[in-house]
Image 1 (spheres, protein in one colour):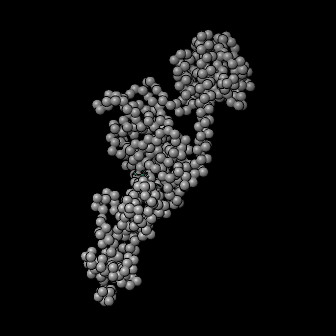
Image 2 (cartoon, rainbow, N blue to C red):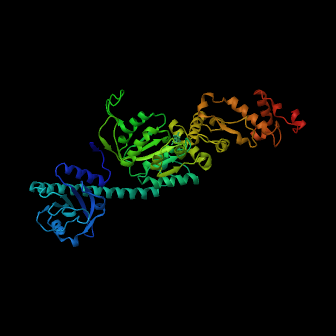
Image 3 (cartoon, helix red, strand yellow):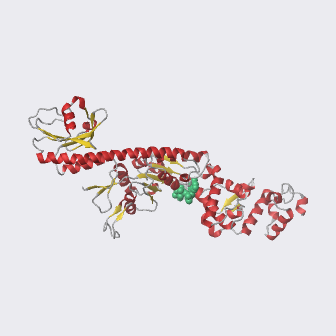
Length: 515
Ligand SMILES: Nc1ncnc2c1ncn2[C@@H]1O[C@H](COP(=O)(O)OP(=O)(O)OP(=O)(O)O)[C@@H](O)[C@H]1O
């Protein structure tokens, strides 16, 4: 199969590419590229051809014991051992090449300095003509440049990684790079620490967390803090994709691959090349497509649907799920091998209710953000509203909080944001001991049924009355609880047609009743 490599991601792959191309021109059975180390030793970097075996990968030769090779390197000229020439067979202990077999060696030089040696062997004698020797002399110069450049880019990668690590360690909570994953709670601080650590690597990350806990923002931040940050961050939501759509989205398709494929289309792997691919709701990825994803993750190769070219890509994967992926594996709905491949670095995002310390800072952040968008002064938030926010369980997590604050900023029109602006209202249904425990936020989906101010006020007073068993006056009365004058409260009760007697119990004083 034609193997098209878009981005050779390692020196191993580059050398494989070079030696494969070389074999189209020179018939060799073993081609080996050896690197010259500082200790004057040649060590195998790549071996290819029908005679290449596993043992050769670990082979090295000390040049102080192979004066013939040292001399060839010093002269910087390719050398063809003559059929009758007596010489030590370099790979003698590793394979059985006949006496007088063809053996050609070419020094690898870069900027006038030796960096290694290439050897070509064939079990048949006289396989390499003088023209081939000359050609190898020229090609070995190019090979040396490619190897040196690749090493230099690897060195630069290492430098970049080191710099990234140092930079990430210096980041503080106020750093702009972390602005989308705010939070100071111990639970969230642990997440941020892990984000900083894992960002510098290429490890696949599997993020688990309830809906709206910030999985995508965490994935984006990992990418932003990684050495890949100048390359694309591409997302794919795997839910609601059938197998063929998922395959096309991931790997792309050629024109005419299926009825609706009117044009060629790149998949997310191709688009994300060099960068990060975020696979959201990975638990929903159809079973049929999971082996193909696994293969791409293992080999870094894929084919477009309807295409014959095997492409290679260099993509870092971050996957996320609100479901317990391990449970999906146990239920037979997710491949175990893929689960382990994706979950090399698992990251657990705590729900907002487990990090209440973050609610107020996040609230202020979102209020500021919204006010900036609306070009108004950031409104104050009443103490009561802040308390209400702290007491709400936030099933929709940060997204729900963000929505509530956006609404609040809009409704408050620059004035102080109160409970009613945030949709916090006392629930008449849940019996409470602390009036603030009964605050609830109108869920986003019921925004069309957003309670009117009158309804909110009525329920609020009813709740206070139920807390005080209908008592209005005095220290324990509803008026004190609501911070109102008792007379004002009475008139509101009348106006709102609240049936106070529904809340009365026998221990309410006659005096209070008579009022
Ligand atoms: N720590 C945070 N700091 C600031 N904004 C946040 C934070 N966490 C989440 N958000 C905001 O909350 C919203 C939801 O976040 P995000 O989309 O990352 O959550 P998610 O877990 O991926 O959601 P889903 O489960 O629906 O895919 C986004 O608008 C995001 O900007």
